[in-house]
Length: 516
Ligand SMILES: *Cc1c(COP(=O)(O)O)cnc(C)c1O
Image (cartoon, rainbow, N blue to C red; front, side, top):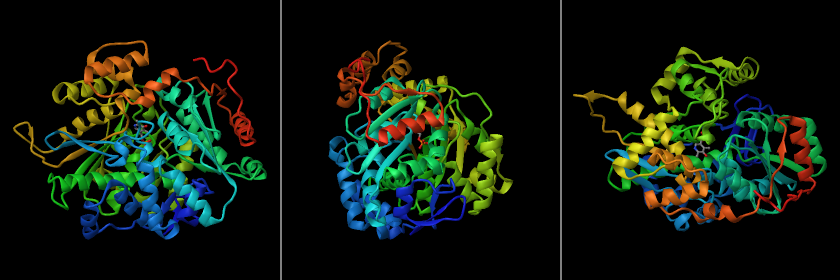
């Protein structure tokens, strides 16, 4: 299978798309066509374990480049790092009639990014082999909190790779920051940027596109790649859990094969939900994808009005991994709804860069109306949804999932009713993207109204309230010295300098022994 750029002019293999991350013209790689998964194949997949299902989906895109057996082997390895040794890395929990939560946070860093970032290093290694690249690969990632840690952990001490992560100084939760700044490994670098996630992402994308910067790295025999969801290798493993959730509903007798279901996805960079849309293009019976935003509701407005407008205030919320105004992966969806018009997609992206907005046609808007529902939750809406779900069903969730639950309720209100009762029987699967213990103070506040000053006290109280077991990796953060305290200005050259120093092998030790 070949991959093409959303902005035209390039055609590469899957392995090349994974090594490069971003197309040379700034576009994103998309599959030349969507491979189908037939009903017969779905029946076969129903009998498979999660790693086998994931390898099967990945194989549709990458088997001719990387080999089906290799994919199976790496999915087994990647998911064996999850709770319960990967027997069920993405469990589906029923919380009410027709309401399910797909828990994607059972990986080593407690967020859904692990679903893909435990697999990506293996995909990249083989992709380098088959493309004959023996340069060192430097993974450059911008993070709103969770990608950074998952990339650091996924690539830690992987031979032939280095990882540099930039996170917004004031824009991540305490546990997320600690998780990144204590990171072990001899090939890792972490720095805060004085700005928000959009600043980090923009800078990283510009560094990818900079010939000068890439030439400097090339002199050191280093080449950039991406662990953000702009890399198709990040997206592909995420398609698998949509299939797996559907198959779990089928094998547990909740649906008949072919019945349509809805998915609700807490959304930031539009990678997770786009993977769901890709699953649908491959034949998964999905009725609607519900796109849930927090107060940074650019996407909700886009789905309502057909105008993407980033001229607005940026808010810091209790769901920091969704505090994003420029959602990169929307470009892939725009490309598709425009009838794969690369010229038009490039024009829109230029308009976004220059005028901070673009709009779509009525015909394109009609496609979105059919397939998506966009909504947003205020902080109060989120808290209410978390509290009610805990109160009524005893189910505790993180703040990002809380946003999804709140928007799910808004969506359900639009469905067909009789005597005020919703009569629609379509099952809804809400994607849960983080372990509640990653945001202990906010979750505790939402569930009980209690405000504690300290995250670790938050964990203890939350444990008493919910009886859920806190992950050891989060408890241990308390006793670990910091390894990284670098803060850089929101300035491309300064960030480039840090990366070049790191590429040269300089990791400056923290002067004060890592005191917090
Ligand atoms: C990254 C993240 C999201 C948003 O996912 P996108 O793919 O960026 O839309 C939501 N919740 C959590 C906890 C995340 O880490």
